[in-house]
Length: 451
Image (cartoon, rainbow, N blue to C red):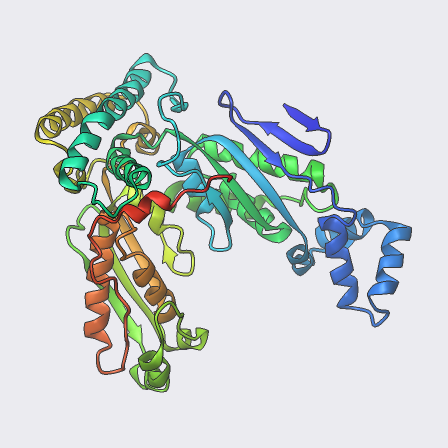
């Protein structure tokens, strides 16, 4: 159902409580008008003052409908942007939305969400499905207190440390461990900002996603955008294009590799002679500084490894590299780090509990794609990462510090080792955290709170 709350456009999603909201920032010159001005500016020497007069006299609607939607001048869509808020969707849907290299936005962190009340999506709607979801929730909540006490024994508060910050760091660490027992069907919120062209191009694929939930989000988002910017959305759909996108999205979208066991370098396609021309920039790069973008001309390197889905969510934020979205299954097992981080009694309970949950998930009569909703985020998935040296260096340096989840750090350290070996003769320097696995109470400061 569509709603117009004075200025914002809202479309309710099929699942209870979920919705899409397109933000109206109440600007006098909205995104459509801004796109029109920029397009006119590219074709006329009349100047911006002349174009502003034209806008005032004629408006932007007919212009966008004719030249952007009608004629298909896609670059005009680059000049107007929209902000969309999507609430009450699964972790799986959030990853699908973010599986776009020009996505900009934010997702709610598992460290700052109260999962005692948060909706867990049960797409098959059965009692068995509900039981699996509530079992995950119960274990997650029951584990918090004993785990926090265990962590305080492992990492006692030092005299020099602020007790309030220390307690927040302990809580954050506990959430980082217990998130492994949250199902991927746990609901979350996403903020999503892109230009008109990118929204249209991504919706063209998401409406054919393997998950019905994502299809619903795509259709409702496009509908809401069309209501807000009536002349910039509602593009014609071509039968052959729709059929082509549906076939590959349904059959090839999710990535699987049942044979993957160890960290693997897939290929090294970097031209060493060309890379030698960048040796000075690689050797003299100071900490917290990115390599020049021109280094991308030298080629790419590909890696593959197993990583729990919870940490994959962090890895996927790096859209400068190419990644496939993995299918979440129990094939590659539950990440041992989470179990080893629990106190002994809780660990034994967790191991038995996981076996029981796996049996219940196996008994569900549905597809592997839908079973992802009921599968916990502690299970490992195959990750493929392909990028140029600038993108890879930024990735491994940022994601190998003590403030990053340890399971992701472990894979980044392997990637660093490989890159050092591959490009030792070309002068590649990597700036690393000297103690990447040390518990640091400053992690308790990494919150966003209104003062």
